Amino acid sequence: MPLPDFAFRHTGLDRAEPMRTHPAELDAAWADARLLVLNEKGEACCYSASEIYYPATRVSLRRPESATLLGFDAGQSYFALPLDAVAHAPQEVIGIRAAAVEWPEKDAAIFAQAKAILHWQTQSKFCGRCGGLLDLKTAGYSAVCGSCGLASYPQTHPATIMCVSDGEHLLLGRQAAWPEKRWSLLAGFVEPGETPEQTVVREVWEESGVRVERVRYVASQPWPMPMALMIGYDAYAPMQAIHISDELQAARWFSRDELNALVAAGELSLPDPLSISRYLIMRWLQADSALAEFWHTTA
Image (cartoon, rainbow, N blue to C red):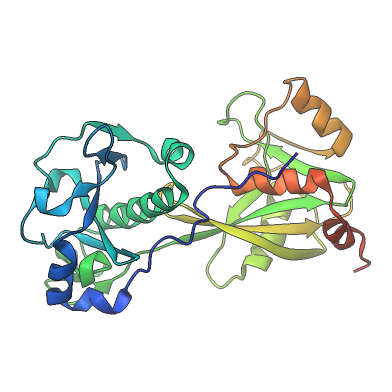
């Protein structure tokens, strides 16, 4: 069985950061730009039944100050705008999960970028220091307080997700809020002053009482739900007793045969195929030689 290719891995756009402070260049880029419009729910608004992007000049002949430069691909410029800045009603809307399945990979990656940056903008209306109103600057990538001058910038929240195993058994957990029968890998946000590797060890211990002995980075995934970055790790831990925290409803060790049998019988469901969690689980189930070497290396 081939490994699932999780969402938002496309390299996306050349984000053209130096251009963000040059209004004349931004205006020139607007002239033939493709515009991704998002509503207040973070859904993409399609210009027509066959067109994802709005033609920018159909929205405004002049570049709105609220237009966010997403970047370029082969000379084509892309911007994002909230729906309330656009007069044209969308033909249809689509959420990020559906788009990750239905759209080309590049367009799904552009949507992920737009969703995250516009979400930050909606959460950045007032200054965190004095409460003054913020004005968007640098083509949407900063916000400056009109009262005290404090500059704010988009945030990404890093979180680790851990494939914890002794080589023969995989540690999975379940939260009460998840769909019935859904199990997944343990995960948690990086705390201030902490490396992601330290987060892996701490979060596994806090959630399950399992002590991790070594970790190895595997891959990462932007996860704009709304502003996370999932950082995937292999984590070796000897099979040991589990003591769950109140974050989990349950946690347990599964052998490969047991996990495959439960999934085949419909008694257990794995995470969304779009997610890095599903990728890490399927990768462990296949147990290629390089992966096996990590699990069975003496620390």
